[in-house]
Amino acid sequence: MSNKYYVTTAIYYTNAPPHIGHAYEIIAADVIARFHRLLGEDVFFLTGTDEHGIKVEKTAAKQGKSPQAFVDEISERFQTTWRDVLNVDYSRFVRTTEPDHYQVVQAMWNMLMEKGDIYKSSYTGLYCSGCETFCLPKDLTPEGLCPNHLTAPEPVEEENYFFRLSAYKTKLIDYYEAHPDFIQPLFRRNEVINQLDTLEDISVSRAKRSVGWGIPVPQDPDQVVYVWIDALSNYLTGIGWGKDSAVFEKFWPCDVHVIGKDILRFHAIYWPAMLMAAGLPLPETLLVHGFINVAETKISKSLGNVISPQDLMARFELENADPIRYYMMTSTGFGQDGNYTDDEFKNKVNADLANNLGNLLNRTLNMVIKYCDGEVLAVGAEKNNLLSGEDLAQIQTHYEGFRFNEAAQVIMEGVDRANKYVHASEPWTLHKEGKTTELERVLYNTLEALRQLSILLMPLVPTLSQQIWEQLGYTQRITQMRWADILDSPLPAGQKIQLGSPILPRLDSEIVGAGKKR
Ligand SMILES: [Zn+2]
Image (cartoon, rainbow, N blue to C red; front, side, top):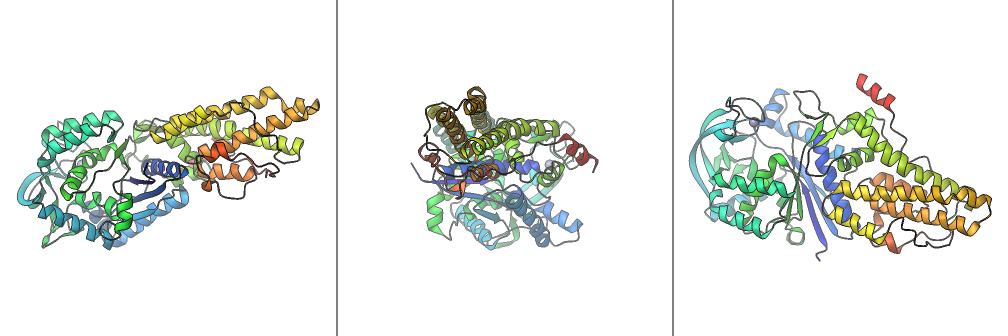
């Protein structure tokens, strides 16, 4: 088995700051990255921002800023939101305005040109400046409007460069058949195969006079590289294509591109065809997620229902973003559209994390202090099935298969069992009756379950896991743990537990009310 893992998000378009819809995708990628680190793999996790194009140009102009100054600001907001607010541990943040990326895009362009897959031709079509793409008449609403923007696309005639996409139809179909897991979930695969019926060559440049903000086409200063070759090549820039061949050779091909359903076509059709043309291996998996709606309504600036991760943190006075991470990853199956409401969020977080997990930790540690002088006793765990080998195998398979909600469910069943075990064993009665050996065994088993659970939960809620870890008396970081440690490294005898404040106070509906009024 290969010991490397390369995971990417789509790069986020810098015409507006990040909201919880963007957060959904990057949290998933972070969970995947953290899980594979836990397996002991060398993980490269790439994210970044897509900074060119007419929308950026227009928004910057509206704000009286240069495009570069504008994208610098927005890109910085993405970086700090991911790193400082959501605790996303990416390896590199790539920006399409970096010099490295210019070189990669131009090198890719030259390769496709030499291959004979790029040619110049004139093009007349209907262009939606919101989508930054030419629309096919069949994709428009009955009124002739862009279905995404509900505005009329403008007729545009231009001399552009084209990529010979149509030449790759058979090769693409062959690839999908040979790699049934390439597009996940499976129902998305059929969507792509249906789109191949009308595969046409695509425009890959725009005249500089219509789109000024972009990477110049090599040897043709009147043209700039059009969005998709620019944006998609970021996955090569991020791991040093043409610059650091050791890193590139190690991590390419990508193990999983995490993308939204709206950009599936570009990743499942354009991107593999470009890579085939460039003679590069194709990614293993496209993991396609749905959208997060707010109260069953699509997030949209015009509807005024855009929520940022910072809004949520403030609304519930959260100390860290783990409740947001947990809710996003477990309230809906990955691939389906998710939904956010204050009540669903509060109920799920309170039930699973504050009550079920938080109480188990708190009551167990309090009993260890009261009955065992705050020390882990050297009794060794008996087989109590709080977490069996079978449970662990299931959790691993769910994480590996991107079924985060199912992984969490098996973990929470373990928390339930531990709570019921404590309840049924009645340590307080054992103490009263002087049954010390039994009492110590019950507490040891429960502490062991907590140790295992904290590692299992780490990809989803890294901060809470670290806090449980510290309360169990460990001084090293929980991120140093590996999957095998779940079974092989039980709590050492004599370790002093460090009872702290509850890891997560119950989320309060009063706070939500106040947040709404603000
Ligand atoms: Zn549009």
